[in-house]
Length: 112
Length: 112
Image 1 (cartoon, rainbow over the protein chains, first blue to last red):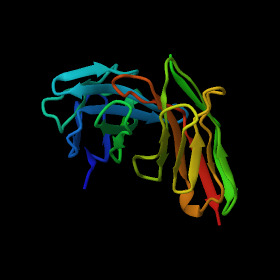
Image 2: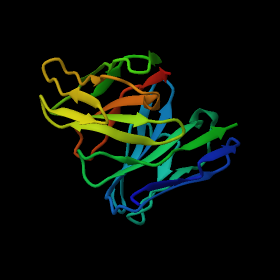
Image 3: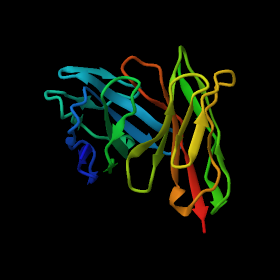
Image 4: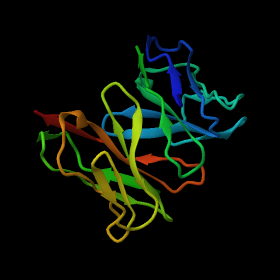
């Protein structure tokens, strides 16, 4: 089954404790993105990747890092999380620009 | 820059009622337009899309027509069901990397 898998689904943690949200897709897609969803703001892109070792900033990259060492994986790293990063996060992938994106089920992060 | 404006929700309807969710956009170039749906606790799923002016996207009884002259992509369904209760996002892409610009989302609640 074609899917984008995120882990964990839920995480409560404290300010400053490094965390990683994993994302994996099994569709051999080249393009992957991370979004955060906040009430009244819709989804905003954090980072995206066009291929292995090729990443770039989206609209709200501050406080986040990503890496793309393998085509299927695109982890999101919060080196020093802060409460304003409490949000619902989605990973997405697509075969090519202009094509629909496939989304994971989301990761709800709470930073205390 | 690109932007998407959706009508605010929540929109509450009775089963079998007619649904319209307005979406207008501002974009450079010729965007592709999408409607995504998010059911409770899940990620976003593509509902329908249109890639050029006057295209009509349709799926599951929903329809939307790409209107370049009014820069709109309104979503309609003639007879909603309780199972249509969800959050609906209008989105566009003009980016060669496929970045999606989302509206804020409209929550739809259908009551029996």
